[in-house]
Image (cartoon, rainbow, N blue to C red):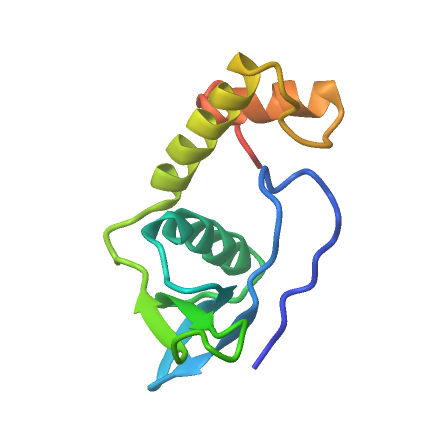
Length: 132
């Protein structure tokens, strides 16, 4: 079992960390904890991104799970929702590009990265520059 540390840098192009990296039913799995009344598919792309970054750090996983934990006493019991295997890092990047575009259209910040870093990340996302 491993907790993936956050390094506080902008280079990953997204915020957050994988909550748990562990075998689940014999398969290395990247798990995200979620609190609330239900699991939502909008959590899938972020899990894919976390697992992609973890793989680059030597922590490969075969599957992802979103685990909803009750936040309040009257919330439904915990449940696990598998991340579809068909989702890829490209799906995450597409969702990230849309999120950033929506923020720009509203005149809102796209994050805490310096402007030069944001420009570099846009170039990487569009394929104009390598992330290596």
